[in-house]
Length: 122
Picture 1 (cartoon, rainbow, N blue to C red):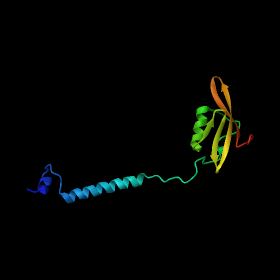
Picture 2 (picture 1 turned 180 degrees about the horizontal axis):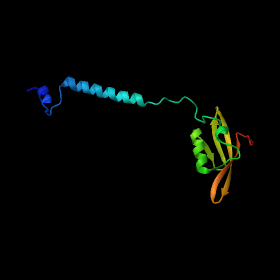
Picture 3 (picture 1 turned 180 degrees about the vertical axis):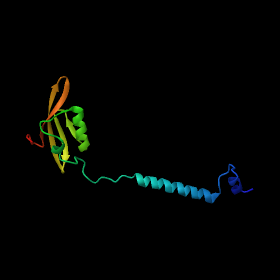
Picture 4 (picture 1 turned 60 degrees about the vertical axis):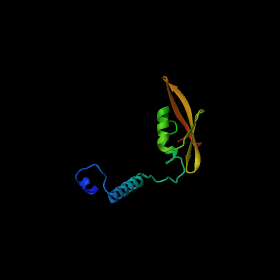
């Protein structure tokens, strides 16, 4: 009895060479299709803020530390926080510094935005 007969009858042998080659080709094609669909385009833009920092930060606003970090990270990549109360952001190819003042209110730490890019009034 041939291998093909065992395969059709539910035997345990693998199909012939042509069927194995076809199955291997389909598996490779399937893997390539999945890989092509999951590719994300490489960003050519410079890392920085997607919008002007004065659009999402307000001078004089008091914000809790975790909320400030969330807001900045949502709009900007590669923000640099300095311990002396500054955040360095990149926008439009230039550097924008945000000055902060630390405020302790009722045991909680808040930060007041003092200036954005050297501008101290809205």
